[in-house]
Length: 143
Image (cartoon, rainbow, N blue to C red):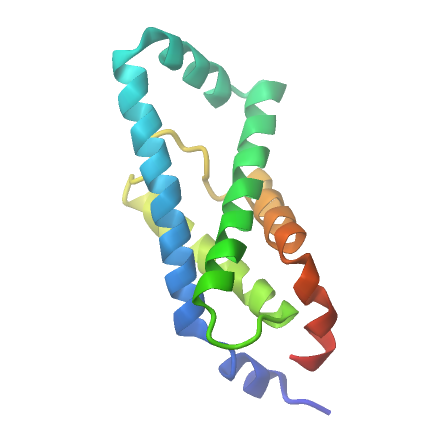
């Protein structure tokens, strides 16, 4: 029987944190860009207000945005990983992303709040990570 603690220790945590940091920097940059544009262009401000609402459109947008962030994290992992990617690394990427989202939220780096810690963001990140990371699912037994 495998020791789960040893398996966790063997994961490339530094690479996963770097991937999460790069991904969150893209998310922060996109929110800052849209926030700046919405202050100077009224049409963008109206659209942002709809997307920030608690309507079905706003909730759907937040889910799609989180899915995109999760998929972007896997793309970054594919570029930065020095070893073959497996399902264990995909699962470990999720708490790394959540940690950095919590830090960015607490530092008020996400002005629009499209990616706050919550059910929608968690579901979107999982769908994005495992949707884009589908080719790596088969290696789950080996991690």
